[in-house]
Length: 406
Image (cartoon, rainbow, N blue to C red; front, side, top):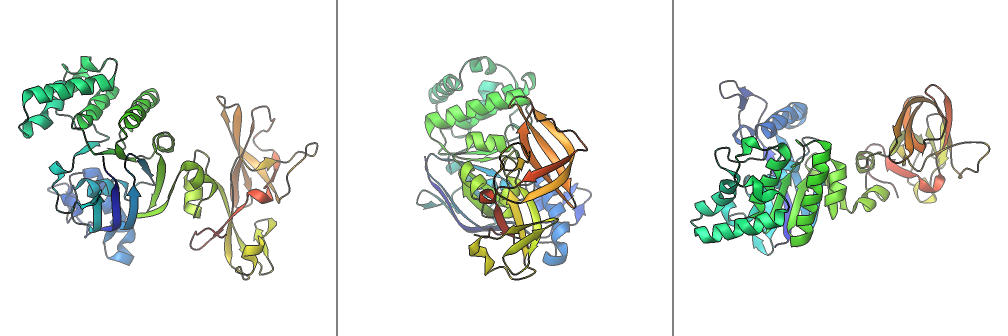
């Protein structure tokens, strides 16, 4: 096993806006990468950034992070933010980066991919279709010239680890397997090498909901059993919460924040983290300070905390944040927490029968906000609703930079 450490790692691609029609891919560095979808994302991002960066795309921007020995770090963020590029430079598939990457105390810049002892699992399985399952697992040992006895013993041990029913997959070709079975085989192929590091690049995206849950449990069991250092890239925040000891939130090639899910949710460093993370992102309402310690947001006002009053001159943009499950529907007959009240119109109701809850989405002027109530609450679309924002559960962010104001 190994600790993984990145120090000031950046990766810039040059230029990718033009397409080579004959080859059907972008010209330049991104067009030379193995992943066509990755190249397409880089091309699209180049078009967005072209006026400011002349077509150059900074896929990783001064990334510094440490993944402890045996830890699983889940990496989340919007499409094109650099998640897959991060895995590629760690794996050694992309060597055009600046900065340093260490496995333990060893700088791996000049270490070939084959000598890094990495197990990698992709979204598209990447199995050899002409090999049976056993052949897919054995191939690693064949290219290294390992004895047959060693290969068979590792395959046997891996089959036991993978659990019930896996041995039946060894004598079948990938084309005869279901998506879930193919992904189990892909995970086993990564595990059979006895890796120091596991890299997962959205491995469950192609599976249906039931198979995702089953495979997620299996991956968690393997990671717990062997304490293998792992990075797990996903767009699914449920996967990130279930599998990651910590979560890294990425945006535009940078790490916005790293921490346990509860830390990221309850103590976000930025409006981006607050509005991105969780099945119900934080309500974010932009307003402006009047210079006297009062924040005006739409049709209501909030007193700024004492620590922010001196640093918030008149006209400063301040965004108010409140979690959906902290907001409370006001009912005159029931006690309500202290805090500003917002009046709006119910636009949509989204029931969650499993939790006996419902999410209510309401519009107040130019803002749409949400809150959570019990299913028994009798709200209907089109009704007026008054919502209390508890003053002790409010967050404040600088509107221009997105940074948390404390």
